[in-house]
Length: 499
Image 1 (cartoon, rainbow, N blue to C red):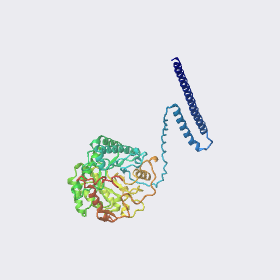
Image 2 (cartoon, rainbow, N blue to C red; image 1 turned 45 degrees about the vertical axis):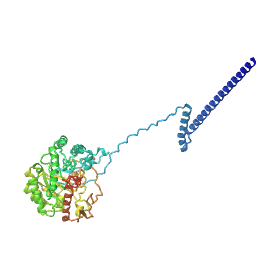
Image 3 (tube, one colour; image 1 turned 180 degrees about the horizontal axis):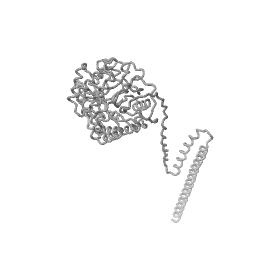
Image 4 (cartoon, rainbow, N blue to C red; image 1 turned 120 degrees about the vertical axis):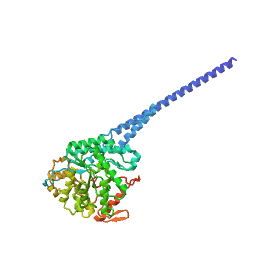
């Protein structure tokens, strides 16, 4: 019994010793493995650090090792993550972009002009757009008064959106008036697109919402003694045989008059239109014009109405009798008279027209433009040149002061150009821009070498055939009483409202 007990105790003792030996062996192995792992990791780190040092001080012009720099750094980060068991991501900080330096103002080479003498001392003006203000950079700083839109945009954005366009246009008008005063220009035609679609049969609206701002613009013009006028587009037809066209034309005239009234512009703020289309029967069309003016136009619209001879349908021979009968002033356009001459000499037309202005207590005004250099055909000659090179001789014999609207593509530059030629006003050199030396005879929407198609008809470049264009444009652009969208952007003023 005792022997068995000793045997069992010995066995237990051996087993315990064996287990202790195994544990000791295992522990030693673990320490050795751990040490080897640590040494291996340290070796890798030291190796990579050594590689990094070599890369960070590469031989000159060794591009490959620059690429290795990024790779080595990535390895170090990975090893550190493995050893520390704390992976991390490095956030690269983007360098802030330096603001661009503003471009220096360009230096313009302004050519000399040939000096001339004149007795004219009236005001010279331009229409609707100032090229210097319109071309300001960045585009967000551009100043202009013809922000417009399409009817689809009104449907999407609502009436408040389109009204805000009008508000911005008036704000920029104030800037234009101040610029004009700073440059001795005191005569300006307002853009007909100041309030987009204000006269539309469906999407039209009153300008009362903008009355305070319009009054501010008018007060500034009055303070400086500036004359402001308007010129609705050629689609305003008082002699149309279609009642819908007549009503659309009257709404357009009322819109322009409300704009002038809210600006508190006096009698000199006239609204100018052409005779319009002849509709295959000029005598009947003339009678409809007279009837509309005498019996249909509201009095406040008639008080501002002025007719102008055009180059297509109605010359001074046609309009002067109407104007004298109805006591409606006539604006004489020299360029139009040259293209479609009247049997009455210009000096006589001016004398009789000025007599009507005098009876009405309105300061006379005339229009001046020139055809582009090299223009031959009637369509080429209709296009306005960038600038005018001389004042009309007829102005020398006019006993009273007349305001002259310069209808030229270079806008305020055309006025400053005449100032320099005739010494009419002091001109700031920084406000001058050089003329375009390569004027083309073609203009947008007016191709001199092509036949013009309207519907099924083909119109040759002949004055008599061109009369029909106005009728076609009339029907196309003013038939809006049925609520259609066919006139989106129709009142795009070419030479009258924008140029």
